[in-house]
Length: 360
Image (cartoon, rainbow, N blue to C red; front, side, top):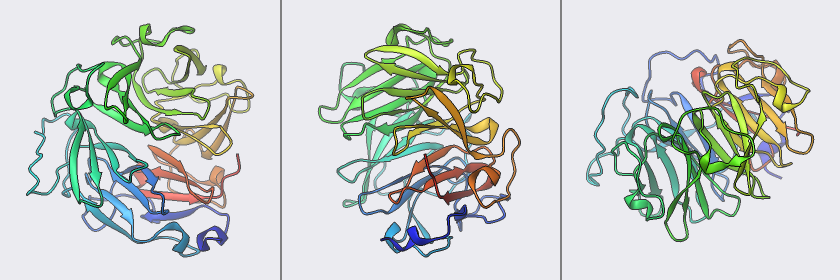
């Protein structure tokens, strides 16, 4: 059994500031972590947003982590710098100079070991080959726009791709192309791009409509269940929608209104506020990072109900309690189930990553 799995069940600071009070960004620590993922060996990878713009990883695999955090990390790609999402920043692909990212929102570790990165404000998806120590463009060219459906990813154009999550079989990359009001996908086997949902217009989704003919209000992140259902969170729409067999249906917050409420009841009657991320748990539940409510919630597709998992909504804070619902979060942006079944949360505005016991 991995040593870390024998640790106490309480929530712990795994990476970052124990006090959860960020100061000025510094190259010596993780700043504004936005998403995490694991490779096949149990090594944790994560990305910083605009307060750091780097890719980091744990120095050791999870099986060797100490019983109590924090753990040591190393920065493996990206030049430390502070950027602004609203300011132009030309994409530099010169292999002889340090990689310059601009507001990464997400990452995914592909089956072949590549680290796929959503370099959002450079309007592209990039891939890091660990073996070759080389960053390449997977999709997008640094220019905002919309083009390329039906063709090769290398020729496609995006407008702020916020999320890049893999299907369970690792053959499809889902991309939340937020400024194009679309959810797009790259077939990693043949390299082609397609639109999964969204007609290019911003608006509330239409229940039971053809997914590609419905407007979307801020498609922010998506994930795919083992049965092929895609779950997509809408940032401005304050909702979770399910896409199945080409049809779309809102499963959390049918009203689209921003707010907090509904835990323990039907998902369609609940409220969300600016959700920013979504992922699957080991029991088939959908974890929603309800960022502006400073919490993580779980939608159960079997019961269609929603429950609070972590945080003390709707107020932010930095206290760490004995369990997740006694722990404050401050604008979290990422979540992941670890190889040992624990839950990790990128507590972004507290400049830290938390870990703790999770029972679906």
